[in-house]
Length: 309
Ligand code: PAZ
Image 1 (cartoon, rainbow, N blue to C red):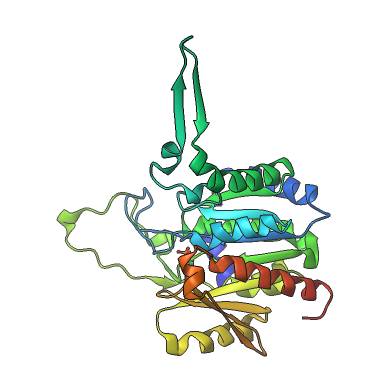
Image 2: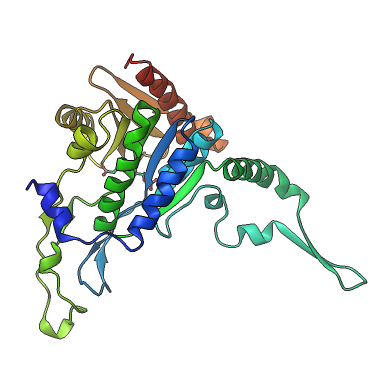
């Protein structure tokens, strides 16, 4: 067995796995005349106990994935939004805390009837989002799949990829989730909550098998696969992106640095590196880097489908 096969053999699929895949398969069939993108978003957890009280997590908020989902929907794509449960989601990401309630007005008339309306100064923000959301839903172009742990993520990724294989080059995989590189094998986890009276635990982490390898070569060999590479050290970002392309033979890696990821990404292919940046004016006026990134990727997807990439 390969590394990744061993990994899968040690973990059960997430709850309702078959049902989730059936829904994704129906979704994919009803969008067979459209381009379809799987967007992964948010971070995976690595449990420290079977009955999980504590886990290792990471910084990802799901901004990249949820924002990109909106831009792909705007361009007519069908989107499978595979996200960390409780991370940012498309459309509702624009309303944090009490934002939405503060946009509404409550009126009681003399007959005792109550009505709720949107304040006029909130309409310019709410209406375009609501319009796009309603259109996507009425056309059945958005489906959500949730994960929390690393093993749930990997099971769902393989399952959804299996469904997307049938879409051939119409399918794009946009792998923006922050997936842990390290884990503790299931058979080394304590059953119950780690007890402090037993002293400080010594935790040793294993390397997660590189799933891009079977994904690209076996599960979706005809799809347009885009992986993301996050670093904090500028000097290694591009070379690591090239390493990934060399190893996995997909078409594109999007490099980004933790510190600047919201306004600068680099599209790295075997032959070129293209910087996408927001200008200070664009940042000031609320333009999102995902708008530029998605526009660029859709062009590349067209070339890929035509066999010119
Ligand atoms: O979720 P977010 O918007 O806070 O961050 C996005 C990101 C940095 C996780 C994503 O752009 C990315 O680089 N994902 C891959 C991370 C990696 O495994 O290298």
